[in-house]
Length: 171
Image (cartoon, rainbow, N blue to C red; front, side, top):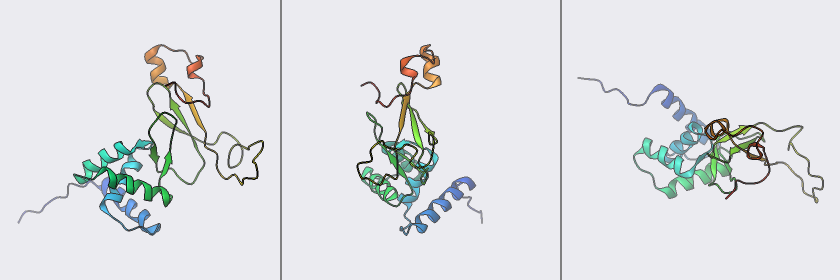
């Protein structure tokens, strides 16, 4: 009798076990779709829903777009995944939750990088007038041009496009 070897590698199994444990901790039913979606987000921070779906399909064989969106929605609601929505770009998903970090986005290639809080205590920035709100989070997106795109285009680091601003990419 020949023994069958699993095609799942040890790191993949550890990732799957971690995803299952996280789902259980949040009181969610463990499904293969949720595990695959959570693994996709963990393995590719700042992925779009389409990128998550592509990864999940590579693991599961097939999964509907709606099942991916449903899983992402539940994972966001339960605090396992964070959804960011940069202007002029599709929503992106990451598993870095529980802190108030920000993002730096390349205007040229769309690359997204995590940036720790700018300064101070949570929520990192204090509104001059909170209008009676109890502010618990600040979302900051820095826009600029990444080193690879600057090098490719020959742009200097002092160009206006390479300077972080609060505005979305030119569209």
